[in-house]
Image (cartoon, rainbow, N blue to C red; front, side, top):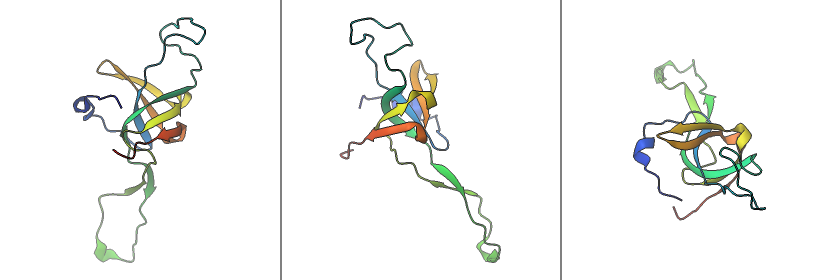
Length: 125
């Protein structure tokens, strides 16, 4: 994975079942040798990139037990089912479900987990 200055991303918090992805640079030339204009790529519906940050997961409510008043009230009303993806994974995702953002002059995608088709994980990390 390409090294990315994570200090500037520390301020970002991804919510829910979404992940922040840094897209891989695409070739600006088609297989036939034609140069593509900015913002267009061949077979644009599928993209790939590295996952930089992941949200907490799918929220599920905590069951309230009113018959056990001694437990007290919890400030946390939500638990999460964790995501399958992890930071550092290479993800192949549907661009149609992604939201493109620019942060500190860099291009990123915010992608819900259901738009991710495949991940490649380096178990050595």
